[in-house]
Image (cartoon, rainbow, N blue to C red):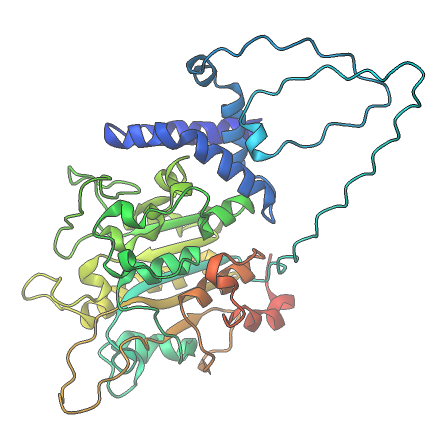
Length: 442
């Protein structure tokens, strides 16, 4: 009950973040959200999560919900249960949402032979077991805007010297990591939810609700919570309408986003597009400004198992987003990496079973210097893995994409794949860590 109370307090605190139109949306979707998330959590590999357990307990005990519903007609008194009655089966999600009533047991005609016991139904086919968790205990995923593969990683042509010259020799380069689309939203939704690109996501979700995922669509964050693991998303310059640092900031349902030039933009924050995280407060609790990362890195126990780290529009490497006279595009992203990455690499969580993934979640390459030359593939971005568990200086030419990021992280934590990440052609780099498991710390 202590965990339940804690989760309820978290959800209650999160409710304070909502007002007006957002609160109306929360009330309208609360019953559906509670039922769907509880059922999804029960069916996950980690059992029901503390958040889902709290939601179920609150739902069953909430007097306001009962008072708001019409009073049911009195039910006929249930007949006493026979000593040979079999235990009641677990109700379905639909049945759990209604108040159960007992019906009178039918009486058999006098002299009739006793009814035979019905055969027990065959158990449903078991789902394939999720892979066992490996030696990686903490994953940090950085997402930037790609200037193109050569501009990022080519030793002689790179516009990101810290990434190509200092970090590259320390890690394993994924030479055939490619994006699904140049826009940020299709790649972000794929990397944390396995969602396929849509016309709305390719248009960067100009209408917020056009990309808002229904409550039954789960994300990596839901899986981690259900598996008793922790997650956090760190977004640079995320602030409320008054300009103060705020959690889980997203547009109002009927209003298009007007991001400040070079600042925070919801398109870089895929977690705010999942009802499963919005409706019960998980997003409000764990989707935070980047300024909180430094404190969380001081102790391994304070560092989430999964951290999603994204700079603002300027420092992500989008061209034309930085103030005049300041480094722009790939140079801005390189300078940001040089400030933030050393803090991650020096953290206790990274030093003992950590993995840092420097990836790209959008494409914004500059025009080619020679317009007559064949343009490079803008979707080929490359990605870099850094970990004490990997041999530095390696390369991996396997075909990877944002679904692969999700699949690999799920494999590392022993979680089943979501959405398109379960595809037969989706590759995972988690197997690179299996051989080092015996040397990893707890």
